[in-house]
Amino acid sequence: MPPLPVLLPPAGPALAVTVPGLGLTAASYGGLVDALGAVVPTAVVALPAMGLRADPGAALDPESSADELARRLDEHGLADRPLVLVGHSASCQVVAELARRHPHTVAGLVLVGPTADPRMSPRRRLVARWLRTAVREDPRRVPGMLRSYATTRLSGFARALRAARRRDLRATLAATTMPVLLVGGPHDHLAPSGWLDALATTRPGIEAVTMTQGAHNLPQTHPAELAGHIVTLTRRVCREAPTG
Image (cartoon, rainbow, N blue to C red; front, side):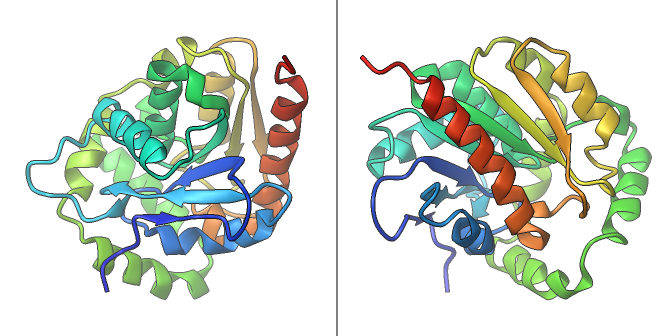
């Protein structure tokens, strides 16, 4: 079965949109969507290499993916009002680019395990950090993640990862103005607390929080706790939104 391009809220307009991380499917974010429920109706919009299979010639850099996301939001009727955008891992760079390139579509950002910490270079350091993180993930989630990778295929994974590692998320966030919440797991060595703290100093309006549990795949392993942080930011940006 081909991966779903979009999961829409069962009723009512979406307040938030989540973009899958590299290789994961839209369906793998169902637990987070359910945890957010009617409080923050949430859609999941997949992109090439981030929920969908990537064509060999597809442009997978964050800028191109952000423009594709803007097109898909409009296509699915999700661009009628500013949204809270939730990124996970490499898709954090995509939603941040959307906020920079199309600021009228974004009320706030939640970046979960954002990449790419420049201290992960060279590649052997990235591999070491991945291994230290992988052993702290919930082993019960591994079969589902492997099914996601088999569904989306890894053909675009490496290209998208290379493009993400070449972009400095700090520069992207510096060019935005909306509230940003950075969320990390205590056992995430791909996006450790020091990296989140460095991102939080980029400009005023960026905050970092560390969850009580989890590593890198927080939307799959700890959706309820993560949903609480998303609800907090969403309520704040809705309260601060102009009323007329």
